[in-house]
Length: 228
Image (cartoon, rainbow, N blue to C red; front, side):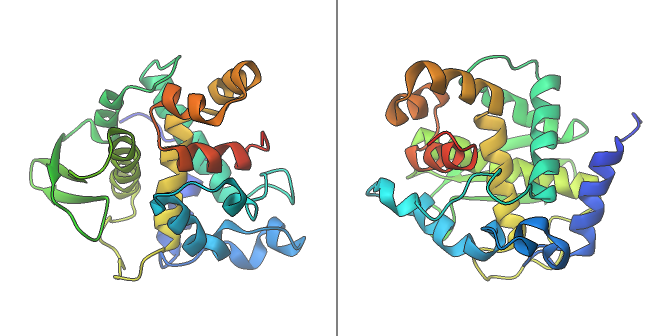
């Protein structure tokens, strides 16, 4: 087996030590210590933004850029994970192909199914010989893409040593779900590609279409990167 990088070991160690419901580093987070905005404390509002049908730009004003009050270590590690798989998949342009989701577990098949889900946009099932990713058939193609890579993070976490069904309650908005959303954002809207395109286009709708992601997801990514 290829050697796992120290930063990736660090990521899975943090997630394995936590309960999945709140950030395992919250008591020593630089952002929190400096009085800055902490994603862990606004999971509910972020989830609502992702689910809202009507887009209102001012609703995103509470999101601060990553440079606003120091970096979030777990977010850094998750973005490094996304960059790793973009590199392995040789992705150099937008939109990011959904085919690279197969890299989440190269030892097992990952089957994608659309079903009339009601409470969730996506779900995963671990089978003996592979995985089944369920996506909500009523969602847009862009929303399905985001949900697919959200679930891919859970598969990666399971393979990295954090069982996907460990301590997963029914409470909506757990910290692990936030990290899965962040992974989907980082892999579907790669930092360098987004910064490059935004400098050229500076139009939210166009950026979302080019990346084939929901407008709400693109807005959150641009806010986080400090571009809007």
